[in-house]
Image (cartoon, rainbow, N blue to C red; front, side, top):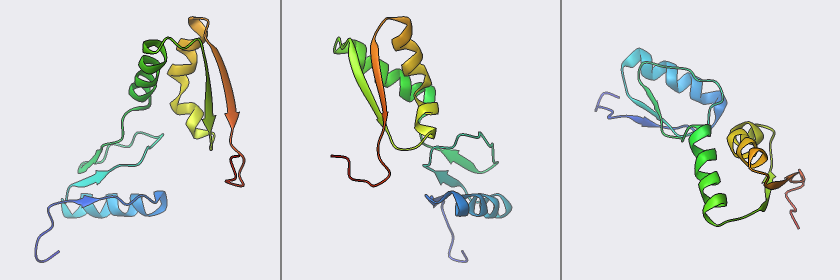
Length: 111
């Protein structure tokens, strides 16, 4: 850091991100985070570049409605994915679209 740090990008690990964020706040170094974070924590020097879940869901909905799909399937790995897709599922229910929701197996063999 003696040579100067413009910013720190990452990390992707949730366990180390809080530590990096704290260090950046203490040393007044910009921290650029790209992870989806369910809890909104406003740190003084952190910027999160991941789209807000409602914006991402709206973009998915624009694809579904733009292509005129009446039925679609949501495949997800972790429960947090459903939190991020609430707007999409709500919009599809209100408009009468059929949505199939399936959790992928933990074995990573998705066939």
